[in-house]
Image (cartoon, helix red, strand yellow):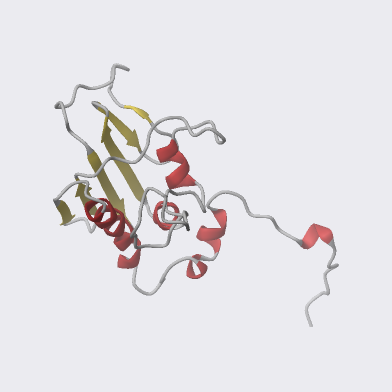
Length: 174
């Protein structure tokens, strides 16, 4: 018989960030079929197209079993989140229950949307070996290589992109 442990307040765990997903992935996604995780990026790209932003979505499966989803949508917001004080793209990909699809009254950003609303891309990030997000917006390119979002360029300069380029490139590897 196992030694009986004391069950008091110290036995209650409060997991933070994406740790609950890593410990209990089946609570958040289908663990039998990992393509469900990729489906979240596709759903977000389709949502942008259905909202009238962009006409082309490209899904590329690479030899290393990574998947890339590119769209011509508005690009995930990169400005500073008013409460979290970090770029909104970082909030969306690193915090559970953060996203732009929670409106119930029909006056939100999306009137039709698929996916897991607020857990999808953060779960994809939590369960991947590599999750990279590049956002093309307002003539800037932002990269979220895992933990933080920032304008990208080796010399610290914001890279030049073509006028009017917009959208998201999302790359994932299990």
